[in-house]
Image (cartoon, rainbow, N blue to C red; front, side, top):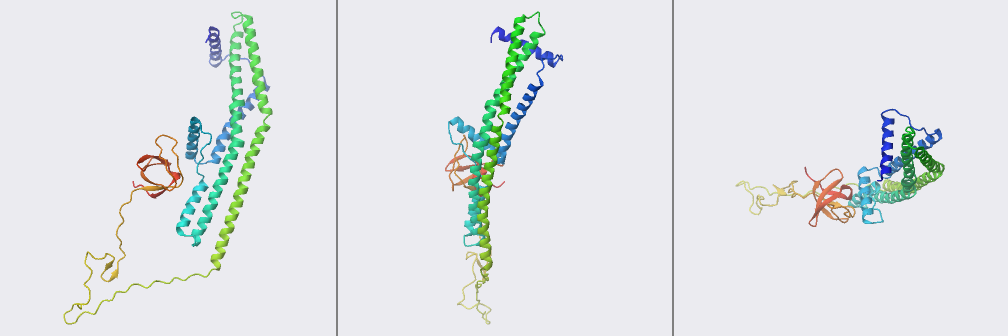
Length: 367
């Protein structure tokens, strides 16, 4: 920095100290300028807060938002254009319903209904993905662009204006010690910065109809999402009503118990109190454990201990060092639960971390 620049920084710092500590008064800006500055500041805060709250609206889970933000950052660093998404809650619910519906069987009332509901939830997840994309492209991104360009430019001009005001006030109070020409130049620069800042704030506030248009796009995206969701849910509701009516008109099947196995013992020989030679001896300790003294035993052998594991519901591509990649349907050995959102496990000799919502626990970890 040049000597003149250092002197200017010293002047501004000295004036700021005299105003903050000594109570000195600086040059006052007119009320119209202050009103523009206040409105521009409120607009800046509104844009930042609305972007944040809209992201929370699209993905309420803070862990998923944090992971999505991290993945987006890594994608930008690696030069990837496509932003990775996250599993929607409707999609996870749908996968769960379909899985257990198929386990029960489509021929059962509840199993078939679960499959229908699960497929509907997965359709809702696709519609929600479309909402996320529309809102990001037509609402969040334009607001972010407004903040990054216009609002930051205003902030730069206001900061420059404040610096030139401090420089002018310092020189004005020391007239006689500082040449009049230098004081005049400081005043001209102050008015120049004030005019530039005023124009930029005025343009921002006068073109706010663009933000109204972006807000309208948000509402249209929401309307489209809810219309599609209502249509999809109406179709499911009709299917479930048909199942109920069909079940009510179908005659109820009566339970027919199966005959119990009967084991006949021969009459004992009255002469010696024993059994006849043709009768087989009672089972020994090494015989079938399910047959004891002519009756079926309900005891079954205890199962061998199973290793904690989980099944992958989706493909997971590792984006960061230490993460474990897998494909849908893989069985992963669980070794530890890091926190409420991440597991540690092993697959094909590889160890790493992965998110809970990408898997379904088959055998839980024991603590």
